[in-house]
Length: 92
Image 1: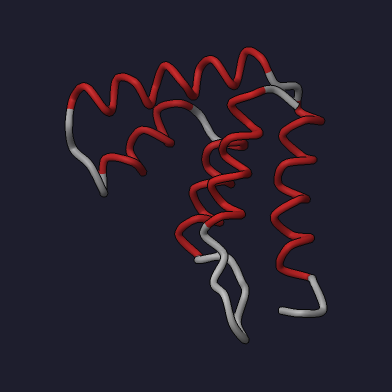
Image 2: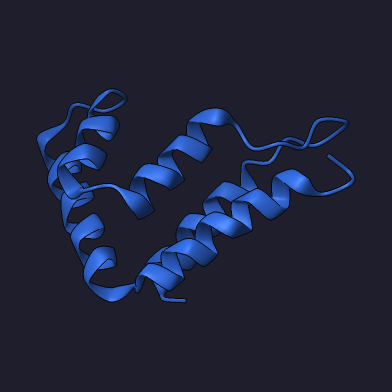
């Protein structure tokens, strides 16, 4: 998997809650889904809800386009499956 995808998964893994509930925040799951399976425009609109800064949105679009041109559909499916495996852990 390429660096950008790996970094996104690391970000999601680091945001796991400690303690009894170790599920991933629904906003992070939605972020990952949009990042890997939607268009650049849809992802930028999602990010815009949280940070409406033109420079950040421009960089968000660049990163999304880079990932889309670099990762295969199979890579994206594996990334999404990784999130699902975290959720399915017996400790959760």
